[in-house]
Length: 269
Ligand code: KIV
Image 1: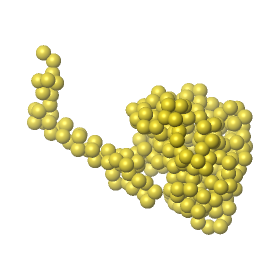
Image 2: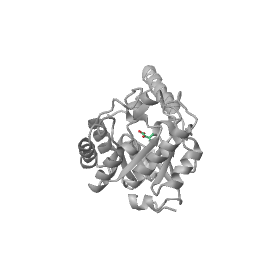
Image 3: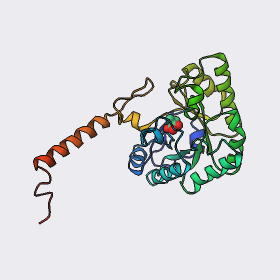
Image 4: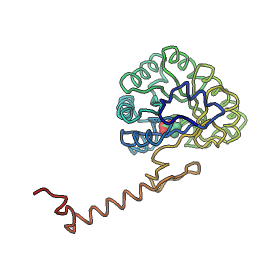
C-alpha cells in the first residue's frame, strides 16, 4: 500500500510495475488539483483535453503551449504529493526536436511540471531520448492518440487489425526503449493493452484499455459527471456533479428572485 504522505516520483511509479495499480486523473485548476491530491491520487495529468472539457473545442488540436503552461502552473499549486505531468500540445513537438525540447522545458520551468506526456511511438522516440537526456521524464501515449483524430477519422478504437496491433506494440516498445517511464494506452482492445503491458518495462496507464494496465486514467469531468450528456463505454462516473451544480445554480437564482437571498445573517449591520 502506498504511503499517503510520501511524494510520488517517477522512481516510485516505476516500482509499481505489476504491483499496486496507479490511479491517475486529469485536472486543470488549483481547486480540483487540491481535491485530487488530498484524495491520494498518484498522478495528476494536465491533459490537452483542457481544449475539449474546459474550452469547449471539438478536439485537442487548438490548445496552445501558452495555455498548457498556464494550466500546469495553476494545477501545480494544488498538487503536492501527486506526481504532476503535463501534455505537450499539438504542433509543439512535431516539427523539430528543438521545438519539442523547448516546449517541454517551458512546461517544467514555467509550469512546474515534473514530467511531460507526448503522443506517438517510433516517430517521437528520438525526442523522448533527448528529453530524458535533458533530465525531463517522459510519459508516452499510444493507441488512439487524440492529436491524430483526423488521421483516424474520429476518436475510434485502434488496434483491431493485425497491422494496427503490430504498430501499437512497436510504438510502445520504441518509447520505452527511448527511456519513457510510463505509457498511456488509449482505446484499444484489452488483450492488446495486456500484451503491451507485458512487453515494456515502463508502467502502462490505460484509458479504455481494460484492467491489465499498471494503472488507469480518467478525465476529471467524465469521472465527476460534469458533462451529464457524455458517457462513453470506458467511463465510470463516481459522482453527478453536473446535476448537483445545475440544481444549485437554479436554487440560487430562485432565492435571489424571491428575495430569500441574502438573509439578515448573510448581511452586515
Ligand atoms: O489529454 C488528456 O486528458 C489525456 C488523457 C485522456 C490520457 O491525454
